[in-house]
Length: 357
Image (cartoon, rainbow, N blue to C red; front, side, top):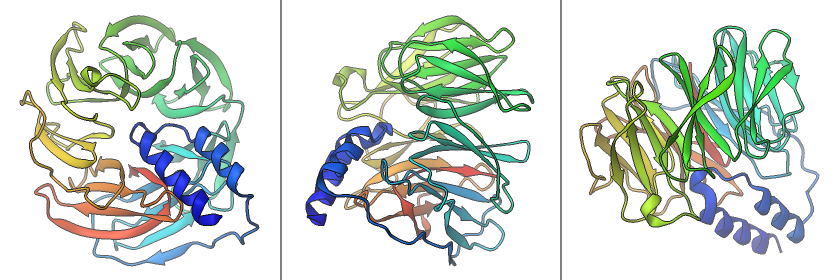
């Protein structure tokens, strides 16, 4: 029976994993097949590797929906050691993202509907902010507030970073995802709507909507100050799988790179902001000057279940997560900017991304 449940979860997650779909259906299905086991809380484990980067890094391990087994893995950039199972006894149900700001780590815990705040040095808990619906990503706006996107709330929450209270909701119908603060405005992805929302952070109001098509889930900025948005998803038309380049001053779409098969899920950029990396079964690398998808992989995903991708801005090392079978511990792989392997190590369950500091 354990094998049947694991196989079901693995196949279903492969179907929807690449847009980091909240694991609601998966968790419900797991409940049908088995009950939670009373396992002891794992203690932090230490690994050693050849990783010596310029920055520390955290791996965000989602865990299994409703099993409260999300955690973090810490990579020490000075000595290359890896510590797993940070926060594993905290009852986190789906760790979605982590943001470091002003000496605090903000861990967005999706299915628990809260944001956990940790000390980035020893990871002790500073505070917990409840009462979110289904939070996804947190973006600091100045020193006093942050925006938190949400799967179901049809709004972006404004979080006061001093009082740790939700002070306002900015109406944004649909599933809001990643967001970026750029040239005085905040740009918000919306997976279920055709628009990239534009928010004025002074008034906390939506002031514009840029029509880019469905499936927006990741946005970043290149060296020309353009916005680059990754669009596409498992339930969208093939013609909507694309990267969209937007002039941040005029809000006009400058170009699109369409994908003939599948869609770009994770998206990352190097420190000079001229090389893009995206995940589409394999990891691909292209120049921002290009106008078509890459023809050969930067890193092959054959035999793996690549799930998350990022670039260390201090070293330009490329970090990739592998969810394996979405039941056992995952893995992380590190490559140089030229595609040479540096290291690999075990993580927690369902690693989905990184936070560097």
